[in-house]
Length: 408
Image (cartoon, rainbow, N blue to C red; front, side, top):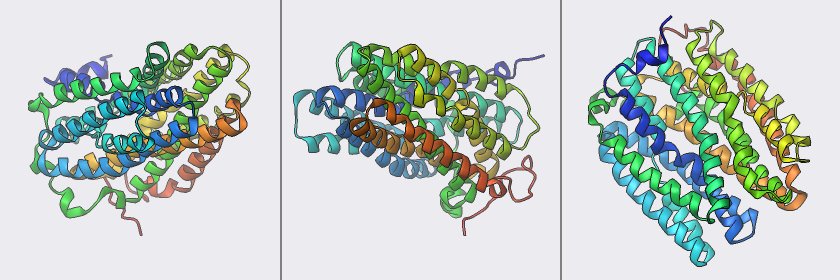
């Protein structure tokens, strides 16, 4: 039996843009938790660290879809390069502001400008879609990128925290900035796989992808999933510090990815017959259930790592089914923006989760931060449960192509 992942990478150029895209989108996971780790050490207040990280994530959530609409109109190279340049410069200013004790407002101002970071995940999926549109290989490609995204969110966060606590507070954000600049440059230099503007121009006539009900539902569900990520990260940093082992935070966050990444790749290679909306409901239900052990896992680093490992099992399946639904429910001409809305939904969730968890940790202790994860898990299940009819395409064949469902 042939390896479906090997097949998609036989196409010239796919290894190059996928590898560069992986590096270029590591910062979307490294930056928020890197900001938390940096400012919690330089300023000693988790609420401030969470608030600055929230400004980044919320501003990026607003800016990224608009950047993606410009990308669909003018092309990836013409839009992504200047947007990335602004983001890199602003991140460097943030590092300087934190290290040199500049006024608090400079932290927020530089973070606001840094949020022009484009959604490289959407750009990567647009390239896969241009290569494999209306072919079964596209599902495998999306599954691979979903598993890669999950690894990026967990491993990237682990790397950022590890650098900040083992080297110096700004190390995580600084490394993220370097990867953003180099990875994006490498991605944009590969012009042969860049989607043609004409192929995506129909989006301008159809309006915004966020008007489609499935995009709204999946984005909302992943807002809550993003909150679970951020809560686990902030709480892990706080708990390991309280246990007197701050360096182990990197390990604890890293094990989040271990089981989930492997499980995601396996599921991506299997052609399940269950409707995607039901697969998504099962995935978020498991994700919600596995937040419960986190509430009693603060006694030791080993127990915390085990609970976090279990909590990460359903992350990759959630990503795979969520983006599979977007691919089926959004027209190809709106795919870049549709994917961007979902990706920024994760960012919004991480912003709120980071701030909420930081506030809870400051006021009620490190262990209680995980209550934010529990609440977010329940909300994700309710969202997907109530949206089953819309996510199913209201009776349409999910394999027949995208179905437009504007919100009322």
